[in-house]
Length: 226
Image (cartoon, rainbow, N blue to C red; front, side, top):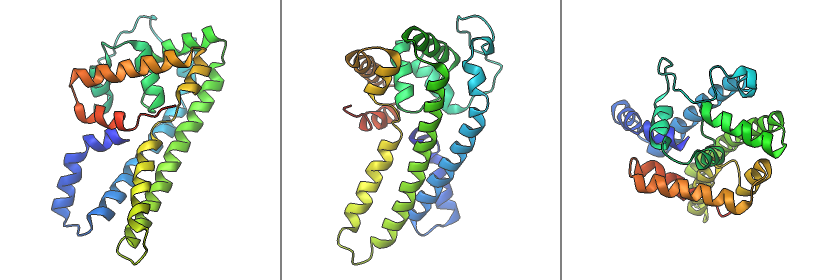
């Protein structure tokens, strides 16, 4: 969600300047709400086809990944595909699972093979992932509601108003991370240290690539110690 907001920053600023909004904070909260609602609708639609996509017979073509250039992709998927294409696919998969990012076909094939090798159910994983994604969206909307309320009391006499707003913003940044190292370790059947090492290697590679420091810095800020 933060990635989508970054990509829409220019439109966000232009809309604010041209429409003559007087209350910037209220405008920003409403703008984010619309982003979350739109993303939620897309994920609901995607959930209707994703179970079939995870089935072996539902994956057209060979196991070798070949990009379908005829398919129109969103800008965020094109962006992510470009900066992640040369990184360790295991680390990329872990990063995308942790941060609730879209899985490409090759990543789903890798996920399926890992789950099969670990003896875990693909359908059980899919069910949990869908629940986690919807929970994340619900939490985002709830936190935005609290931000609206905190904005209203910032100018009141409530002593802890500023602290209340700051804590709500920090929680909003943490929502996007939907899997911990331990959870991925359990599903993959890999050691916690291996999961963490692959994730950190991927993050460091992103940082060193300098292809988009804003995106990397946002993810690094959301990194947890679990």
